[in-house]
Image 1 (cartoon, rainbow, N blue to C red):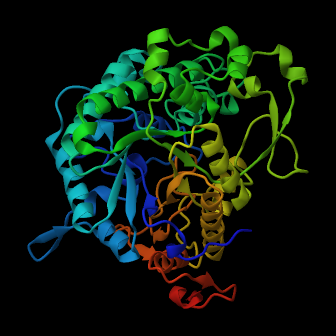
Image 2 (image 1 turned 60 degrees about the vertical axis):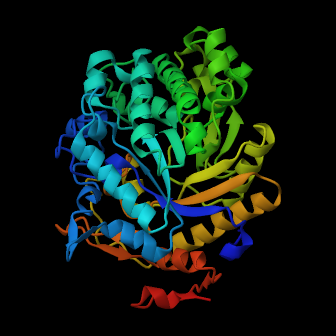
Image 3 (image 1 turned 180 degrees about the vertical axis):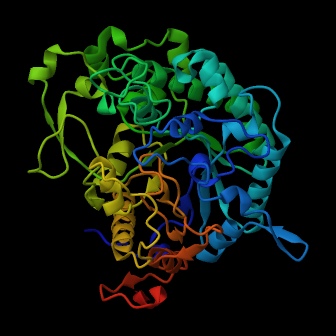
Length: 496
């Protein structure tokens, strides 16, 4: 396993941070004018394995409302500063900022994000904003089925315009959307993500009230690509000259990245999916080609794949996984499965190095950010797929997370190795800054550097060993963490 060096081993303009997302972090889902998102609907219908909702999140929305004398400050932003974060990546809730999906801005939502951004600026923390991270406004979903309609392009562009206008004087790094292909598969193929559309036999437990798993994932992703490109065009035409930074997309596969670099889907994809795959017009192809200033990736694990195009399933209806025609294995000799199920996400830092070098080699050396990389609490996460009766809030999870420290050391080391081999990597963000509501696992899976006690009404934060380690790494110390028995003092295990 590659091991991380010290902060000075990286270029001076390389940025280290951590992230959250609006639905997972903010809470306050029915306060101050926010309207429901598709994730509010999805969770309140009991579609999560543990029947949880994100109503609470990590209660980040209320962490600004703390007074010290006459000065307001944000508890979590102060923690970021104390940790030494150089950057913070977060998403904006479309439903909080523009509750009707289009039209007037919600003053309270605008105030919240302005307060957050101003606090980050004051403390010298670089801001990376994702416009959309899975929480589409329910009001637009009801009106025209969201990402399945080309009408979403105009509404998303208008929403992006509002964000660029209101926050662009302080925000320099914009990501339009997080993993649209993952959202397309989860939301329109397997039904495990909101809005939970799918068709038999592809949905989880055949729970498919509506949808078409063979067609809708491709339509949703297609409209996402067009919406992204439209927002980028607007930014470049209207804002980039004065804001002088860029807009990118968080990508998953060639499915979304090839169009943004080369203007069309991969040839093999067009051949396999056939008439179910929407086509770009010449005008659209021209608009999307080159419509990204950087690439962002989320990386958690690596898998082995093998060809299964000659399997017995060839004659049945195909969903996205069927069209891939591959078998997935978590280890070289593992049991093959027809789809990727994250029950055994192996730690493989070299996989990230290979990915970063591949992206630079294949996609014209476009700058790349690792926007999410982290390790979950394995026992709780596994319980989802084994259908355990209860895997909810594990408030006793140890803050002495040696395995997460080892994970970070390895993956930061692999990022450095990719840089030294010529990959154009510009930043690395830990997922997540603190424990959140996770889209697949509710409160039963913890990724945070900071422990959140979800059973305490105040949701107190407490640094884990990984927070101690990351802080020391960022302070230019260059540390290793002893693999010794845990003591009562987390910081005692982080040594120079």
